[in-house]
Image (cartoon, rainbow over all chains, first blue to last red; front, side):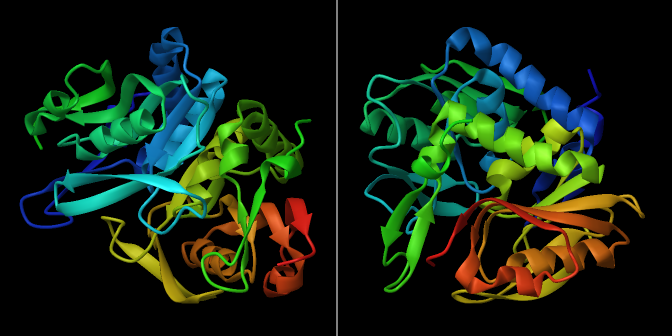
Length: 174
Length: 174
């Protein structure tokens, strides 16, 4: 497998002082690393028999649909307020840098579906937790949470207690 | 091929009166349609021998990386101001609903690379034109522009004159 960790660039003090930002743009730009990341995420998720992958804009859209396609699943969009044009349900979450809301179309998934929550990064877990809530509000079952990167000191797994959580890359420094 | 047009939902007066919004969320959520859309976009782009696909957040991220992976290419992110953590170049564009700026990392692509510009929707062409400018500012060559949907009355092709423009689905009513 391509050395994915070597394609993640660490940038200090972004977006504000004290934050060590993990920049996945070099990984995305490397054809082999992009392919390997999707393949590895799918390999772990395949036994979960996923009907849909859900991810939040914008960075969750980077690998979510490719992962869904690799799994033979559909992709469902969680978006910021006012972006989805049809009837929606919503969930609030606390970000590392503030508070925000995610929305999901009420008819996004068939009831009883098996849904994998994806994001590029697991930090405090707020976004992923909100995505889990959205899935459950419309009658789906969250069968797992799949991340490219996990920042272990931010304890996102605790906020996702009870869910099957997997990350390809883990960082002990956040 | 899956009937992609049947998976696009038309919603009147969104995001404001007089706009007929083309909602691709049903297409994305349908595993067969998602797969077919990526396959068909890649089939058209394959002869262009693409090194990178570039797309703008957020909706360009939905199919851009999957298309890049299918082509064996890398994916490059064009983002709103302040979102990319490293040195950037920028380009302004006029949207259907206002003015905005896109940024690209200065080191996003190798000089002389062949780059495909992607977006889900070709409307007035402003976003895609800005993406072309960004690619050229960092020394790349735009080998084509690839869209899921084209709204022909908005004449986006005129703003992309000189570029090879392709869309899977075209709508004569915008």
